[in-house]
Length: 112
Length: 116
Image (cartoon, rainbow over all chains, first blue to last red; front, side):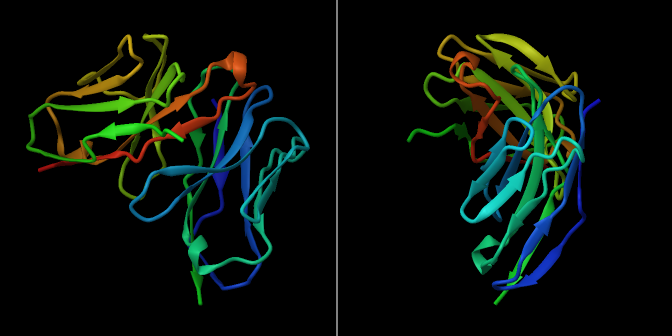
C-alpha cells in the first residue's frame, strides 16, 4: 500500500535559519502530494500542494518540489520564524476520492 | 470563507458509553472524510462518504459507524467506548472532482474525545 516517510523530529532551529524537512513516498501511479501544518491545539491546515511531477508548491515562504525520480517532496524555507513552530505532515492522495495517507509528522521548534 | 465545522469541540465520556460527533462540510463539498489522531501520532483514516454513500473504509473499529445525510453533513457514532478511543477526531471535506483535478481536503478543527 501507499506510505509516506518523514524525517524524525524534533527539528530545532534558530530564527532565520534554513529549513529542510525530508519526505519520501511509496505509491502506485501519480499521487498528489501535500504538506499540512498543525499548530499547537489546532487542526490541520494545508500549507502547499503539488499534483504532478516537477510541480513546485509554495506558500508563506515554504516550497516543495514533486520529484518523481526520487519519490520525494521535501519541504524547504529559506528563513524560519518563531511563528513557524508547529508539526508538519507530508501526505499523499491517489486519484479519485481517496483518503490522505500521512507521514508521521515532524515537529519544528524555532528559537529566537 | 466558510470552513468545515465540527461539533462538539470537546467531549468527555466514560468507558462503555456512546458518543456522536458531527461534521458540517464546506458548502458544495460532497465528500466527507473522518480521521483519528491519537496523542503524538499522525492522523489515521477511518471512513469517507461521497453523495451519502460510503466511498472508502480505513481502520474504523466495528464499534464505530458513520453516515452522511441529505444535507451532506456527517455523523460518527461511537459505542462501547474504550480508553484507547481518546483522540482528536478530524473531519475533512473535498470539492467535487469535476471542479478539481486533485483531492484537496479541507480539515475541520477537530473534536477532542477523552474517555475516562
